[in-house]
Amino acid sequence: MNKTKFASLLLAATMSISALSACGEKTPANTTATEAVTTVEISEEFTPANAKYNDEFVLLVSGKDPNSNVDFKDFSNIDASERSTLDEAVYKKNAAVEELYGIDIELVEDMGGSNTGLTKIYTSVMSGTADYDAAVIGAYDAVPLATSDSLYELSNLPGINLDNSWWDQKANSDLAISGCIFYTTGDISFWDDMQQHVIGFNKQVKKDLNIEDDFYEIVADGAWTHEALASYAKLATEDLNSDGSMDMSDKFGIITWDDSVYAIFGGSGEKVVTVDKSGNMNLTLTGSERIVDVLSSYTDICFGGDAINYQRYTAQEAITMFSTNRALFFLGRLQSLDNYRDMETDYGILPYPKYDAAQEDYHTAASPYHMTFICAPASIDNPEMTGNVLEALSYYGKEYTTPAYYEKTLTGQYFRDEDSMETLELMAATRAYDLGLYVQPGDINKELIFLFREGSKNFASTFDSKKSAAEASLTEIGEAYAKAAAQW
Image 1 (tube, rainbow, N blue to C red):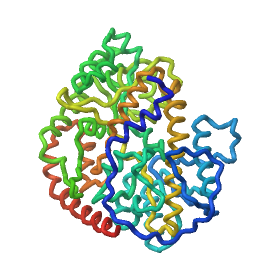
Image 2 (tube, helix red, strand yellow):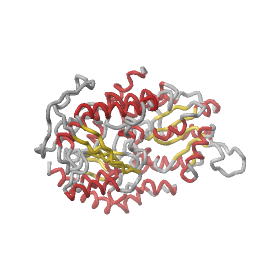
Image 3 (tube, rainbow, N blue to C red):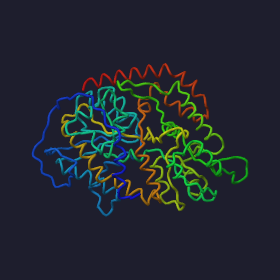
Image 4 (cartoon, helix red, strand yellow):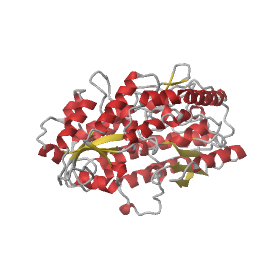
């Protein structure tokens, strides 16, 4: 693949589903547009507003991970020679928007905490103060804010067009309720790309095991399945010190972690909750034989002796295992691969497998714990400025940060072959968002992890026992969403 074309190919892949836009139109509270003169480069596909705001744009950045501010870090006081390629791209994106609309982006950072971003926005909205013009919020915090009338419906913001290529159309579709989109993502962020679940494979271990099969061809042929993953993993497992006890000092086919069960579940195309054409949320985790089969299959793989869960040990031990050629596969997030940037042995990346050959497509999930979304508090006092600035940030994200992340940071630093870039292309085209992982009806989604930790396959009985509470919770959440949507 021509790497210089990767960013445009990636963006084209994510445009397959149009955004839902059934919400009505609300009259903006007030606007402060004046004359606009800008010197920043503008593509023909982006039409900026004729506006200069001469104001601060206060952006709350909050997330579970302390690094979730990467998209908006302030590099203005750092010499250009000391910025990385990606740092420079972030700086150029933010500076372009500041110059375009005569604003100063002021970050209010609140990362690594528990629900603190949610509290800040909720308090601001309930008190009627416009403390923030927009926010980046953790996925788990987005739902309670949306259902408490605390978020502005994004398609109603003047100047924003969620159908544009720099917005993630799959997110718009999967996260829309009653046609309303209260939070989403796109080229405004590359943090969401970093949180995609991925499988790394050690090329030296593959070579030492005389595995001649081309993993990339297997993926391309649609044959990368649970069965394939298990069969290759079995070839690698070895009790290196012959003590009869398998631990992190030995060799395994797979290094895994608890949240991989969310990835394997999403990779099968299943969801905890689906949304029908009428905007109703439906619990799909219960009553499905296929879901039980998918989860049971993965449990067998991970507890059959050929996999080790690094969370029972330490992350550093897992890094050492994979780096010193004592594991064939490593299951993690794209961000996790930063740990192997200096690894001497070559490695490649693969998507999560299909459940079986009958499954038509691959599906790529992102870690809900680490995921963040862009949103706007309902109390903003200048919707026009918020809409125009968010649209410009996403557009310039497409121009600057997306290419920098994929073409510069990843190429030759995370990955050493073009086939891995092909995998990224596939992941971008198949990314899916499970609303149920964010809504968490009756916490039934957490049973996936609880059962996996114990190696239990009591999926059907456990889900059935939680079904009534989950459905009651989902009904309540659905009513709150409908109420919020009705405001627009």
